[in-house]
Length: 223
Image 1 (cartoon, rainbow, N blue to C red):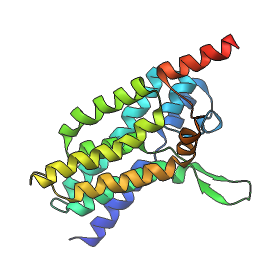
Image 2 (tube, rainbow, N blue to C red; image 1 turned 120 degrees about the horizontal axis):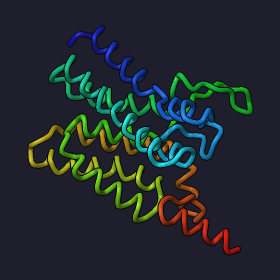
Image 3 (cartoon, rainbow, N blue to C red; image 1 turned 180 degrees about the vertical axis):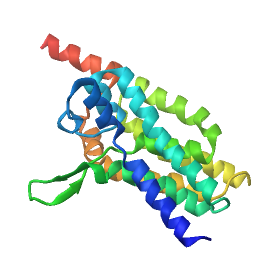
């Protein structure tokens, strides 16, 4: 294994993951700083709420390409190094959630790294590892997003469903068990990023999307 090449790939994985496409697209479209709107995250859901579905969907696609892209990069430069390829995908999610390009000071003047929740980048990483998984992840995600009506649940489903699918394929001897670890560790990152949303889901105050958001708006108008 080429140690220098490994370090370069992992650093590039973080940098690619850290590119804030949502922030850039909203800024170009409206001049608004997405970090000061809604949840303050740079992912597709907050972008969608700020600018509408087209820019939101484009953000999701670009964020997913970050995850898939680092897998393709790592696989091309480090063929056969399965665990390093998985590590590159996870580091891209970390880069998206904690971007060096989105540093800020909190109320205690501590340096923080802003970003998103990592769902789309995790989704892309899974596709990069095994492309047919899109035929499972995409329908499941759409059903939860438009059917259940919570973007946070959609995001949380990605790592879990990936781990389950990769687990079945690994048990059948068709994929490496390292892919299962990707799904599980990605889910940990997603849960950590969505802690506030999980609390709101549990107490019934989580903001909905799709029909659930329209229903809430209708109730507000009726009141």
